[in-house]
Image (cartoon, rainbow, N blue to C red):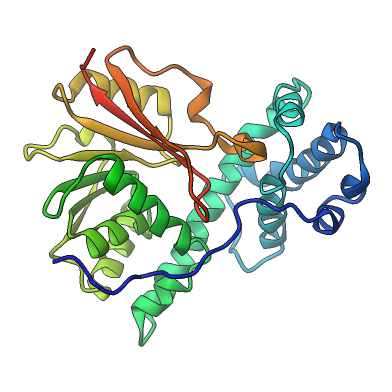
Amino acid sequence: MTCTTPLYTGGQTAFIRDPDMYEEIIPGLGICSDSCEGLVAGEIMDIYSTIADFDREETYPNPSNHLNTVFRRLDQLIALDVNDVTTEAILSNSGINSAFDVITRFRSSYTAELEIEQANAILNSSDPWQSLKDFDYFSNYIQLARTEFHGAGLKAGDTVLFLGSGPLPLSLIVLCREYGLRGIGIEQEKERVELSRKVIGRLGLSKEIEITNGNQFTLPLKEPVDLIMVAAQAEPKSAIFSYLAEVLPAGTMISYRIYEKGMRRLLDTFSRYELPENLREYRRIRPTPPANNTSVFLSVGCA
């Protein structure tokens, strides 16, 4: 049954436009000319140098330590309302290209750590739903779920599968709670599978959402699904989409999220390769604040 009580009623801005805030994030940026790529590129490389050693070791400390400051700096950096010309100049700068993959992996890994922390908070809370709503990015998922529900033409009772559902499957939680869908999460790390199952149970959604240990090779399932969502953190994307294009039945709908505007493009790995010919984009919905992601919808085997 669709929940009649909205999970979120607030709002937030998608971009930072205050010149004083620019100065606080990157000294000099608030008063520079239109060509600010040197200052922004310097901040990118400074963030990169801070996290490079952790990336090589493929380990990130607990979110409570000093890397939280780096994570917040990165969030502020990508939220800057830098014009398209400057953004393109920065992203095409071969001298800092090596930093992009490292920064993207850092944000993905650190976000997962934050989700693990929040998942445990939910398990230990006397009010698990309020604890979920306290998560920093919860409002974004409310808007993204609305976009994907309507963009895919879903209806109550439909089944949505999320590939790479993670330790805190927010997209599935919101879609199933708000829109009466059935959810299937596929996650390759067993510890995250167990944690997310506990969270689902604590929220009272065990009948609506099932979490399975696996990856893209778990597909296709025997049962039909109405939409397959691919997580932004799912890698390697080229191999994942090539496999999905090969094995999924014609007409299967797939969605994924990208960043198209401003410095958020630094984090977008979908734009680095072309989709297989067997996948046709049929809809693209640009973000409504507080969400920052464009939702892209594909169909398998349709000309």
